[in-house]
Each structure stands twice: as C-alpha cells, then as structure tokens.
Image (cartoon, rainbow, N blue to C red; front, side, top):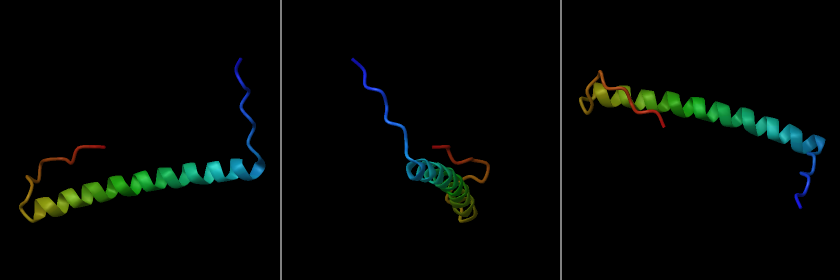
Length: 56
C-alpha cells in the first residue's frame, strides 16, 4: 500500500527551483572561499603553497 506523492503547486515548484539555484550558488561560493582561505594560509606560511584544500 504505497501512497502517491502529492504534486507540487505552482508556488511550491517555483520555490523549489529557487532553492535549488540558491543551493548551487552557495556551494560555488563555499568552494571559492575554501580555496581563498587555503591561499591566504599558504601566503601566511601556515600551509605548503602546493597543497590543495581537500574538497568537501
């Protein structure tokens, strides 16, 4: 006995698309900030400049 999923309303679909786009942007920004932090740390002598930050 499986229940059929309820279709999204127009507003819910629009919000889902907005949130997916925002999530993609936030992930991109996070990746840029992680790399920038790595470069700043390397510049300060905390890290070896050839070491790449590990992806999350």
